[in-house]
Image 1 (cartoon, one colour):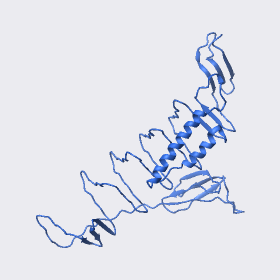
Image 2 (image 1 turned 90 degrees about the vertical axis):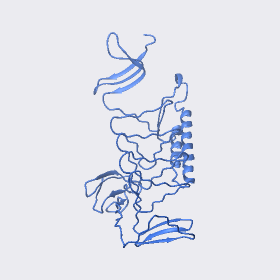
Image 3 (image 1 turned 60 degrees about the horizontal axis):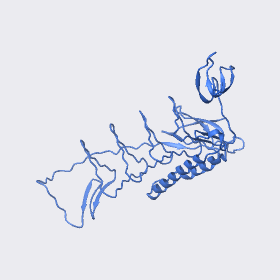
Image 4 (image 1 turned 120 degrees about the vertical axis):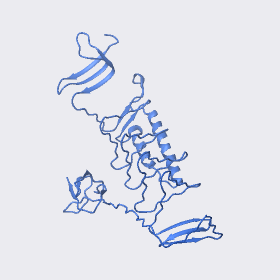
Length: 328
């Protein structure tokens, strides 16, 4: 029927697999019901899409197939804009002594995706892309970086926990409007478990306990200083010094016997970690790109593929103990 042209390729093997083109209808006879328009590739079994030189998936309109197969000018513009944002903010963080982002890695990705010069997958939609599942969703890069760039806001929400872990460092930088860290309920803890904790402000620093006390404790020494005057608390002694006057304003001053407060310093946790290099038992040569399984003494299992130097991922344990390492 004119205006309702369609093509259907179908097989019942393994359920039903179909390629439907044009005016999509169901199998009802003699009056099939319309199911949609365009194309549909579906199967009740498994499906695979493979393109050895690269794959471009786009929701950009190309009326009557009038353009080139890999016409991605609008997409490349978006990639370049995103890279410019990443470079600009990374430089701002570096100037402020923050850790810059890996914009170089994103630049390499742009080169790969532009024209699909190397095998890659590029997706673009002018009005948005959604990736949703009721179960687990994973975004991973095995050997390089993952970049998330937004021209406006980037929002992360979770009904339960949000965990951010950096194998080397974690850096947060706000260029203009400040930074806020709130715990509505429960304790807020900040620890530097193997080095210094430094707080610096150009203007005032305010420490307030609304309903409790403020305790400052140090195992060796506490020094308060301003304008050359100071108070030093060390080895059970209190030392006061200043280039000017000491003014003591009080209704009464009492001198009584010696007293002390035993305020123990908390013990910070100490973990253990290390990389491992897979080697051939006979030749001693490293084994790159080899599957492995590492089992810790408490039963945790880490599986993966060694890198180009035969190294595994870094393994962390709470105590030093034996590990079982297998490769396949």
